[in-house]
Image (cartoon, rainbow over all chains, first blue to last red; front, side, top):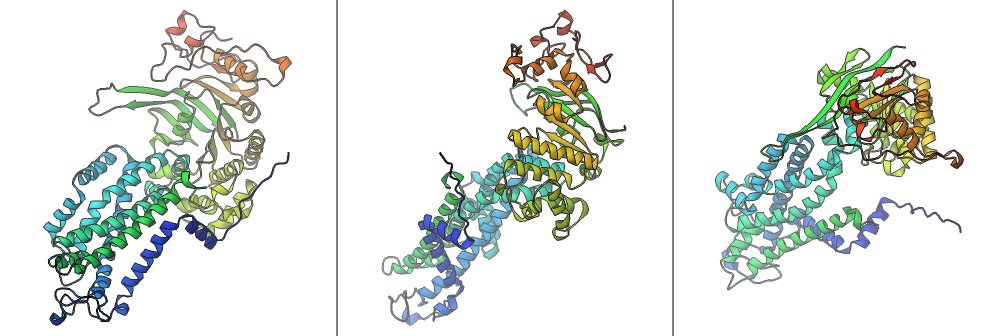
Length: 289
Length: 322
């Protein structure tokens, strides 16, 4: 019998990406969807002929028309334009707060896992305290105390989702610090900061990124919640949550004023969740070929 | 020959204290009163069953863990009393090669980055400027210069171990501690790596502290050997003489337990009875007495000390040596 040795075919990065996309159709859909949404938000002034803030009382609560693609709200503002500009604010808040939570949360989690002892206890008990409150309550508290503006909302969302990142970063760190390459790094006299940043962080990154894509969707939802109950960005700046709340007052006679921005939230959250699921499958070695 | 490394009365006790726990605190003495020297250019082997403190010894010498008692003198300086900055500078002079080449290299870093990093940390040399030296060290361990841009998963176990040796060599250390460095490799690859290590030793005059459980490797590679049992050195001496005529009953049983390839020369195995006792609850007196065929009354009461014998360079810790 002859043994056949099969070497895996060499693939270019583009081919690898295509292969990944073919095996993961749903998350490819999510990626494309999110790309389109992000593009639309960036190109908002080009895609709408109306000023999102311009009121026109004569055209209030109008139905869809060629001029007003998705109709108008109670002040006669173009819903399509407001959704596009609202997406800008909502996406920005969602992505900035997720990025901050990811960076700070993972750093704290890695520090807790690597140092252990009282540092670990201190950091993780604080994280447990934050986790003990329902996320929306923590957010509400921060915004209510500090006032509702862009950066306070970012801060509120960051603090509510940060503990999840700390937890997810801590567990693999504890496993990694026992690995011999970390011991080798210590034997070579590297500083603890260097070991954590250069040797542990990249190995934790995969799991953290998956979490980030899932929590970004959640962050956008929290922003919508906060705006819905009036603790979001002050009007007239459109955000998706604010739009839903404003339309809610007229939900019985013109429901679409709320439904369209609600649908926008749905699409953003759905696309991010699909991406997150795909990433999780790609990183889980048990599902890899 | 001057001594490069002098270890004196080294002891390490791990204590487990649990805050507000109902369980009692317990102590594990992993090392007890270990003393030995390594001369320049010498290879000292450390042999013993798993759990006997071999790895703890290596990590104490490297100062990865702080010993409870005793001193580690390297080239005249006591490492245990150095401030942390001085210690870090010293780190380049003692290096370690680990058992598992699959976990001793960071899989997310290219070989070039892994090898250039020590130069950056200790000498501030940037990656680009470090590359010629990195290629040179790769050549020294028999790896192509093209390995620089590759990642650990692209190499076999033996190749990875060479890369790990290259990493240990790049700061030009005086002492390399090899903790079961060839145990995870195939026999043919083992021989290659050992030959490589010996060639490097001859070229650079460095010393090895070579931890192993493989007596064959020990016999071929080491000059002197320490036999450890439950955290103590029970016998030491030149490797050939020690394996030929073991004085300590434990050394004998260790030697006799090694498989003999020639069936006609095979004797009935005089295997030890029982398991190695838990270091958390060591036996009284000589730690080996519950399993020792030569044990007498004194063995369970008094621990023997490692004392010189009439043979050149041989020391043994036994009340009834052979």
